Length: 590
Image 1 (cartoon, rainbow, N blue to C red):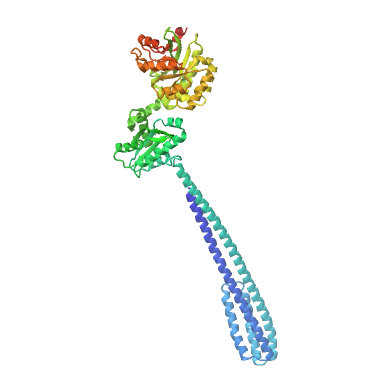
Image 2 (image 1 turned 60 degrees about the vertical axis):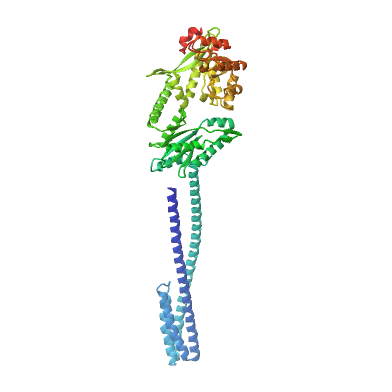
């Protein structure tokens, strides 16, 4: 729209300038014509003066010499022809012509009298000629003056017009240059809006344009780096940016000339290919781009990625994203889109809406599983476990909705509700059992999480030393998480690593993060009776670090006895009690 406006404006300015130039040309022409008439009138006036001189000469001689007669006869017709020539386009020429038509016969009559030597008649006629001459001279002067002024006026107008055209042209040219500059800036801005600032690759908007403009269905692959967040948190964001730039360059080097490599955001890249015949070979080239390790921050990192590919469907980006999610969730590093994925995504969306309503309507309930003393067999604490009392499907276990909550971010409001309600119930328990609550990585990542915990303790009246917050190894990543854990410790809250042994870098986490309790995963507890050496090592390590050990998943007495012999003082599992509502546990609590 702006481009058309610019064109029309330029055309209007050009037309105005052209019209003004034409007008100036006419003014110059009019000035030249007026100046020419002025000069002709001056010439006629000079001829009239010459006739006066000849008349004086004839009067002095008392006759008319032949030369004088000949000159008079030649001059008078020429003067009339000049005036007749000016009459067509002249300005005020009729008066001089009328005066001349009165002057010419009078002069001839005077000369006729002088030829016949009729002195008395000649002198009488001379007075008439003199009067007619004065009339002719005045008329010529008046006409010459008017034409001179007309010429001057036209020339002034022409020069003013020229200056106006020059000014208009300068303004128009300036405006045009500014419009061109603005258009160039808009094009540059539009180009920037279609490019990723970090890598210089096309972004999502450009990919969407290319997909929409593609005649034949293209093939779209989305590539997502695994554990990219760990790179940012461990080596810094500058190293993460360098990694993204390297990945973009590598992908560009393995695609065909007409393919489009784009960065959609974060650590997600896209490759759009037209006329692709072999999808598997295409995917192998993409994985080949990641095969070579990358040197970052003095370390060599082996890149791993998940790839989702789609080449059907109206919404190609959505379909490729669904395939990418399937690749990340499954054991395979690559997945091809199928309609079943879309059906499953719609079902997930429906479950998410149901879960949102469940949080709003307080359909969630808490069950508590006892944590017992292995020596006395009595509860010393309880772990709060959330359940969903679904209006149609009945009581749902966490496995059926917690992964969805973590995936959609609903885990944060859900976890906040669990913490508040569990603390409220535990504050009313008699005796001295402690409360253990699981905390998700999404909650721990919240900057004000420690303040939120402090507010819940103040609201419910639960002492801080009665609360144990359990975090998984996957939640412990960088310095920000460590600082938040330290803030919780300063409140007096105790911290536990849940499912120890199932994450990454467990020993490093024990050294870096301020933990009080080590909950051993059930995958180690099940082999307790068999004397699993790895379990012995975990127990010995925990004891040497001064941690409270809580083996999970104790199913029978033999496991409990073996763990007690290893030195574990506390334990948890179905052997001591299944999760149950707080009301069912009140006798146990007492």
